[in-house]
Image (cartoon, rainbow, N blue to C red; front, side):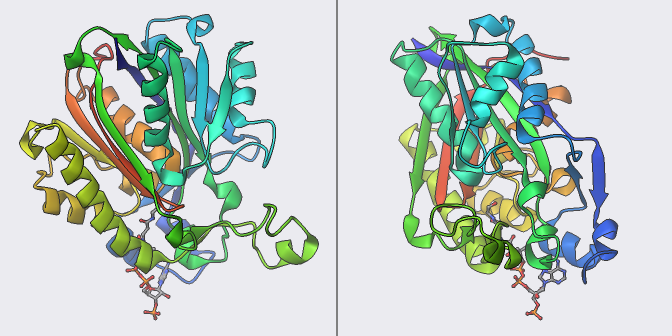
Length: 333
Ligand code: UT7
């Protein structure tokens, strides 16, 4: 028995925040943001919406598209760096309650922008060891809650959203999640960090005054390492599976920066038609970026059952990973 990618869905918050809106609050310009990042706008969740609310909306659709009832989900996994609550309960437990599902395992993982691929690797192992049969995996972020809107080097980059998928079973290798690689290197932990709020720097008025509860990034260093790591990771997984870039229908990289996506695509010989790009309209949504991008091409009617796709991510930790899979959801259009 193999793990199979049965459905994809996303939830995109309504509020559009354009680059020109940033021009009103910080010293930046639409021209700088577009040139350096490719981002034109991003979505922000409403004040009352938490990460689990975004996750819930995406999950409902993912379960329905998988053709199962919520009660058939036997495990819920959420990847997020902006959980509803800092320590407990997990966003996965809150989500389970919203979905009306009880008495199954539900937990969060923290692997930043690589979170969705980390989840997929856990789900694949559970399914193929016959532990669970229908696993809901969700990448969800309300990054606007942990963004410092006075720091122009980070605030223009991020957005909110959620993407969800159901990982089930198949007997056919040709409709399965073929291979996944995940990795990390804590040597670069200070490249992307939310310094305050944890046990190292607890929530205290003086730490909050220093804005330590917000994301910080060494952008340029992260950029260079991202291009190198993403490209070599993909080369490895393709080689290992004896697959050439032209066999891939869609290359879906983490959406952090258009320049990174283009540089990696060129190094790997992916055509512009193969590379999926959504960073222009959603910004960087961390763990949600890959499933959101995947859902966009699904809803456009481009992603079809049987398509061979490659996911590739890089993020805080540092963490990275790639996944090679046949999409096995029903065609929407
Ligand atoms: O999702 C996890 C992984 N994340 C990433 O992979 C992100 C990787 N990093 C990046 O995408 C890019 O490094 C950034 C988009 C964050 C920055 O682009 P950059 O080309 O690396 O710019 P920089 O940080 O070297 O800054 C260049 C200049 C600086 O001014 P000076 O020192 O040259 O005078 C910055 O102060 O741009 C300035 N700058 C801005 N100017 C206008 C930084 N942010 C802004 C801004 N508007 N928002």
